[in-house]
Length: 282
Image 1 (tube, helix red, strand yellow):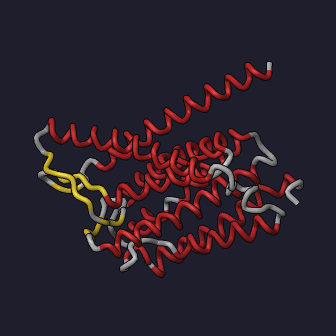
Image 2 (cartoon, helix red, strand yellow):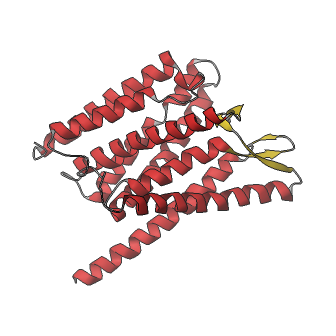
Image 3 (spheres, rainbow, N blue to C red):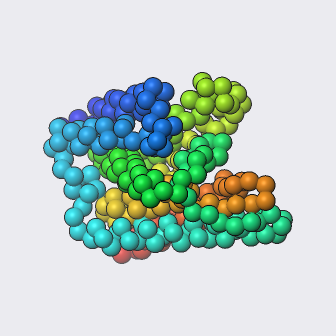
């Protein structure tokens, strides 16, 4: 059924709009991330059901969209290790900046919820750590399964890998604009804040999404990108840098360092492998 290439864009956009509508409903109506759960997870569970159902309809199984059974543990550990490594560097940079300015106080471990204007909440009970971990597992299964799994595979029936990765990553970037839109509607930010946050999230999430596409292509499965994605989301909710004037004041710097370093390393590695493959073929 995917041989009808002219319909692939329409099908993907239809799936995307459906998932985006559920996301909007949870952000604006249910507001699960502002409750005890601290995580908007319902639309992600729905998203998992949607991409699984669509894959079945189009004759694909979970293996076809990246849930490969081989080397699962190895790729998961690679992603966890890689994510922890780049964020270790990022945290060191953040702490050094604070030390230089005589502002560093300590690091603390507790659960918070990410917000565009800074992390909120301070929970140290075990149940909140469990909820945070489970919520982020659901998140990476849904987002990697949809954007790097189903969408990337569908686009590659019509376009090259790079073009497919760019389109998928663009959709992934737009996926993240719901939070600033809600903040604007709630009166928490103005028009300039809305536009600035939307542009920032589209660009940064798009670049991160492109990196996940490359990881998926290089490993032949979603597991390394899933575990790297898990570290990206979880560590900022659990590991906090305290300064004399606030908490996680340089979080934007930390994330920028981690993601820039991560993207550069993955891109260099991919280009070297691509060059070697071309030389081997010639």
